[in-house]
Length: 113
Image 1 (cartoon, helix red, strand yellow):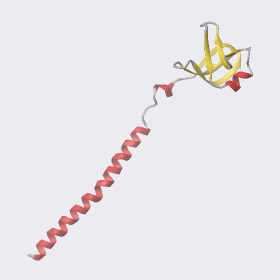
Image 2 (tube, helix red, strand yellow):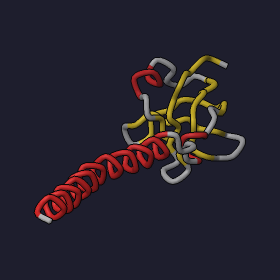
Image 3 (cartoon, helix red, strand yellow):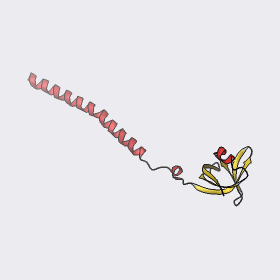
Image 4 (spheres, one colour):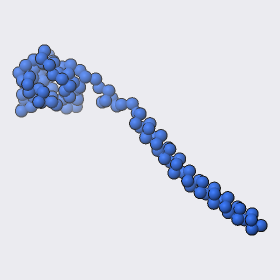
């Protein structure tokens, strides 16, 4: 009878240890899968924005360089003033993405037009 009781206790302990050891591994695997899914998530619409070409004249307004688009009567702020500076007063093509919330072009390139 003692052997059966000891055997039952050992079996119960073995099961308990097995369950507690596998739980962190399962949680890690579940968290790893979640992280992998998040890393593979499709880019947001902001990330998908493609470069556009804007034409106009580079000018200084309030101490900042802008692209003056005469066809739409719009001034676009330029995020790369160092590049814009060399085209001050000239007609150009600006390649970049537009942040419509701030009316700023994130400049990829500027070239004479």
